[in-house]
Length: 166
Image 1 (cartoon, rainbow, N blue to C red):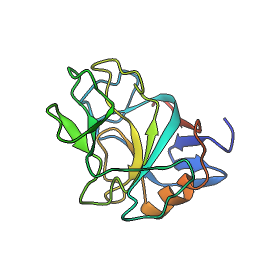
Image 2: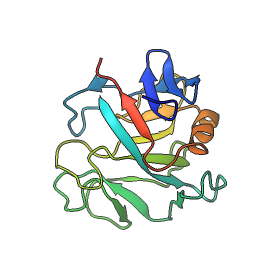
Image 3: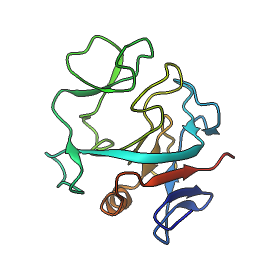
Image 4: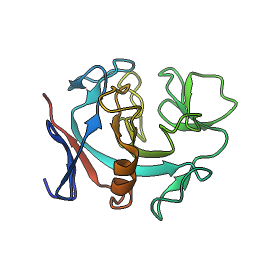
């Protein structure tokens, strides 16, 4: 591990010598992640992409891409575009990336089961803003808004997110 890794610890996530409180999945940390289990997968994941709401925040990093009006994320394991960015209107189960709340104003996409997805292994594990301190996610890693923005300005594609098995 290096200071450039995001490392989840009992004290919070360590990055560049600082600790940031975070929220994990309501299903705990799992070594057998499955679709819908609410768990955060243990392992070494890489940050592969960054998305942001251009209408709400400035571009956090040069490599960040704007979330479009019709951008969705397929979470239907029977869909050929499972665990991929898709466009509205979309007939299969999906999650809106352009939400009314601020949770996805800034989204870091990990390589968990992406870009080539195995059905049932679980859809995207994002790093995003939390609802409130201690409130669990559906499996993602979530931070306080200003901490997420601080991290996003300093990471690069390929930054490792290390989540130890409990």
